[in-house]
Length: 548
Image (cartoon, rainbow, N blue to C red; front, side, top):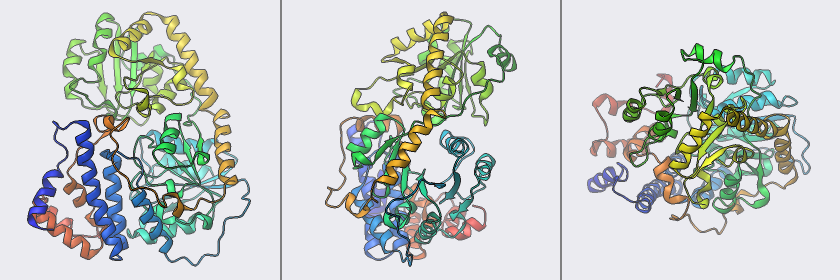
């Protein structure tokens, strides 16, 4: 790569300029994705499998977090399936023609986290599906397993397989995962969008137990259509994208609503409010999600929309749990006399839920798990959807939740809904009871178990998917500029320098490739200081030993 090319790459790697429109952002992102794809394909052709997989992961990360106008990549899937099939494997294991009902289930995760709806659902899954043994395999976790996950696995009679503790050779980890999987009856993938290890491990589905893929990142690009005997969708909009934009055959889709536990109230709302230092007569509006889900759009913050309803009701407050520091909320906070309160995330948010009278969904990024937890306490739920129907993936349309929630199609309607809920206790009670019943029927045991069992039955009944044929002859991915693509970057996209992502992933490249890319980054000014540059020369195995 020439110095001029490096300079150009480093400049456009800084991310699309704010002045770019939605279509131009997609074009710029697709260019970034294509750059990494070309590196991956070139490394593959040279026989450098580790580099090919590392660059493929980087390409997928761009596609997942800076929307490129597609949700699946035929080119990457074909390449990774080919690599996976070439990994030497002496097994004689073949999937039984008629697999029996699974007794031992292996959940495969890229990582698990202390605070997060998906990891918590995994723990619930193991706990609620008590007739089976549940184990966990981690591909790229690289730290201690959260205690609540370890406890869930232990109580489920399973084991934790730490594939991430070995040197980061993608092919070796994939073979380890493949061999571990053969000791189980059913596989459930909960992996991140950019994790190539399951693609390599399950490139031949006839040599492993049935593989199901939990579509938890349903609004994003992800690896997986070629290795999923069944894709388990959490909502209708996700299934529509799986069929129409990811190439998953209709018959290989299943539905299983997000699993939540039955909620046991420990305090009355008045007691919880007192513990929070609130007047028991306060009407508390609550929202709870990750900070990214409260993104400011066109200068309008999540807090701003609530100002009119709070000004009209001096006894009402809004707590937003998880947003942390939100400096651009200051005008709205001032306008309401401090009655809008942004809060940092906490491991146990139950006190806030029990104090709440009304639950308001995060915006512009919805948070279905939080809504279900609120519904379990019979809180009325309010959500917003301002887009065309073709962009349904950005809204709440989960089984039961759509009918149980109050929806607004514009700010004025949203404020009027809040005003009515604040003013009318009977209306709050009525809507809360509707929400409670909907979640109990579909998102809790035993209702949820019916969906899970139907997904299992489908995986056992269908013949093993031939991953090499899924995208055989399919056109290469190209950008789409329709719905929901044109709004994805504004709502979910991350702006980051491509050079930064390459720098942070140097550790996974083999020595020669790492040194070449390190030198390019150094010449382009991509390192902050000498120590930073030196650290990025080290391979993953050494950095891991140093605790980095």
